Amino acid sequence: MKNIMKKFDVEIIVGIFVFCGLLCLAYMSVRLGKVNLSGGHYYPVKAVFSSVKGLKKDTEVEISGIEVGKVDNIELIAYQAVVTLLIRDDIELQEDAIASIRTKGLLGEKYVEITPGGSETLIKPGDSLHQTEPPIDIEKLIGNFVFGKVKE
Image (cartoon, rainbow, N blue to C red):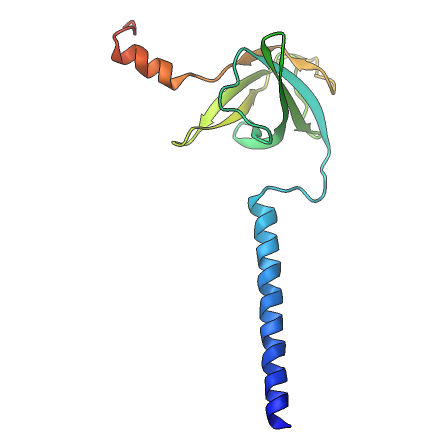
């Protein structure tokens, strides 16, 4: 009888340990996957770029280094890359704000940076940012430098 109780206690402890491990794994999956379980409140804004090389869906949108949204969709319309951004409801963008595709870190991960404008007029949900800057093509820049096509 004593062996059965001891075995039962060990099984309960192992079960609790496994359950805690699964909870930790689920928490880390949600945090690292940047899954928003609360849904969040966002409004769509479109931006038209000549190139979105390296930009992907669910990429961060930042203002002054703070994440304020994400890339929702990228599509080709009339040979232009139309990017739909989801911006948090508490962020107001001016009509003359500039959307730029920037590179983060050494690995070249792309993100969208919005530089606020000075206009009094704000963008409404579904409107477009008219001023955009495509990503800098590092390969082309290095190629021009190597082959002497860069002006001093």
